Structures are given as C-alpha cells and as structure tokens.
Image (cartoon, rainbow, N blue to C red; front, side, top):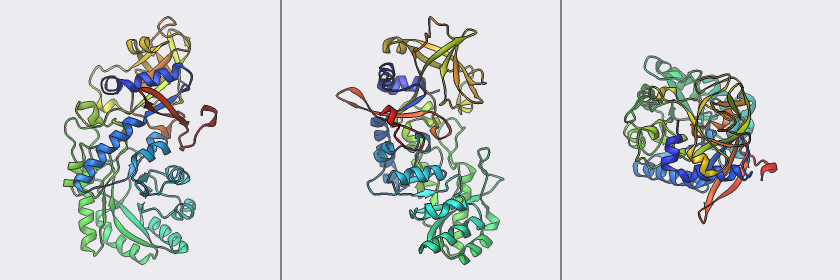
Length: 406
C-alpha cells in the first residue's frame, strides 16, 4: 500500500534496505526502520503539539517497543510513552524508559499490577470500577496514589474496532465516580477512548463520535467536582490532526503511525511533513506451481478500507539494487490468503513470478503499515552516515537486541 509513497518520498530507505539485505547484514523477515526519518517525523509532530499546547505519549507497539526509536522521539527524562498492553510496559521499563500511559487498549491484569505500578506510571486506564479498585489496592500497598483515566463509551455514537469495545457508559459515570472515590489509592485524572480521529474517511481528518463522548464525559466529571487534567484522545495522530485534536478539547495525544509516516492521511496527501520510515525486507525461498514463495512472518494487511478500486499489491524484487528498483511483481497473498490478503500463519508470502524473474535468494521489499507486536518479524534500525546506510542493530518485538545479528 505504501510502496509508491516510499519510492517517491523516501527512496533512500528502499535503496538502503536493499543494500543491507543483499549484503547479508539484514536477515529475511525484517522490518527496516529509518531512524533519521523517524526522528524528523517526531520533531514535526512535537512542533505541532507544542504549538497547540498538547502533551505527547508515543505509541511504540508497531516498532517492537524499540529503544532506539523511543530515544529518538522522547524528551530526555520524560514519561512520554503509551503501553497498549503489559508487554509494551515491561519492554519500555526494562530498557530504562519511564512509563506514561499504561492500559491504553488492554487493561493491566491483576497479577501484573504490583510490578508495573512499582514503576509509578503517570496514568493507568481503567474500564470498570473493579479494575480501579484493584489499582487502588496495589497503589496503597506501594504507598502512593495512582492517577487513572476512565475509558468512557457511548455505543450509539462511538466507533469501535472489533474486539476493542469497552468503557463506562455516560449515565453510569456519577455512580462510578462515587465508588472510585471511596477506593483509596486512586485519583481520577481524566478520560479517554479510542479511536477519537477517523480512520476510514477520505479527505481531511474528522473527530469520531468517541471524541464527543470524551468531551461530554469530561463535563460530567467536572460537574461532579473532579479535577480533569487529561482528555486523552488517541488514534490516527500526526501533525495534520493536531489542530483538530486541540480544537476539540484534547490535552494528550498518542502518535504511532504518524512518526512512521504511514497514517491513511499519508496515502492521500503529498505534502505532509512526515515521510514513510519503514519497509519490510525478505527474500525468495523457493518456487511451486508457478509462484515464488518468499519468507514470511511479518505480513500484516489492514488496508482494504483505504484502497482505490482495482488496486493491486506489489513488491520490489531483485538480485542487485538497480534491478530491484526497476522490477515490480504482483503480491498474491500470505499464509492461506489470496489477492494480496493475509490468512493464517504466514510462513510464506507469494508472488506471481517464475524463477527467471524471482530467483531463489533474491531480495524482496514491501511497503505496508507495519504492526511488529503481532508478528514474528525482526526489527532492523538503520541510519545514514556520510550518505551510506548504517545498521544500528536488529531487535525482536520486545525491544531486545538479537545478538546473533549484531
């Protein structure tokens, strides 16, 4: 989906990834991250956020909670991280980063609370009174008061991604607030939901119904005497969306694909400040029944809602850089998927190519929105020195260096 954007806006990344893969420095089944581009993209988002007075929590799940990326994005000594689940929180903490927002989409299980609250996160999302009480009990035992965000919901107007439905209904808030106030060890800091900015619409970004819900929830909380310090509005965030989020009442935003230059808006608009900063590199493994099988493990397809009719996914294939930049071959799918889709375990992806066009061992480069945390892909971080690509390390999905590649 992002192959054309990569070639037009960051051709150096494609060339560098191909060079390093062809030389054997980067293994097959690897996401390649351009640290120079990520840092520049992050500066653009931070400048917009500073201009409009918004605070940042960087979402790092899609880049394997990578410590080099976190360091490039975060202000020194800050807690500008968001953990979508416990794996994010543990990876960030282990690598020495402070925890900002935890429990963003997946609440913290009871058994994990003592270890994670010992790191004193800024805020913890809770979806129920019961979870708030659990957080309060552990915080009391640790001798402090934990700030929590209430995930709020209005099913009649909100947008929910499948399997992510949750939250306090607005008419439940007064009773819930009363009960949470009785739970020592927690302090209500504000509200959140997801997604608050539309994913599927073409054209300029617009708020979802979730944004109206968190605004209404904040009003209800203030009416109950709660000091609302956070109106947390995550989802689809980049420099383009910051004015909308600020105008709609956000205090905190959570960029993720924005710093990779791979939000849906980066498909639509040519002049956004962020450029694509990630690609997927693999190689041809074998041929069977007229198809070239390429090593998989990192395929992720979430783009049908944004594609134009007749769009056909492709990959770059070659035995040297120049050949790769010139040769595009149709991508047929991965796992049991077809027509470019993903299905099941992606031991392999498939290209419509014979041994002449895609010989065994040829390097293959894809451009799509990556989600490292749900794949088996490696993560290679590169930068450029004196115009040449430099491999800074190969990591797993938990931000750990893989010593056999470093």
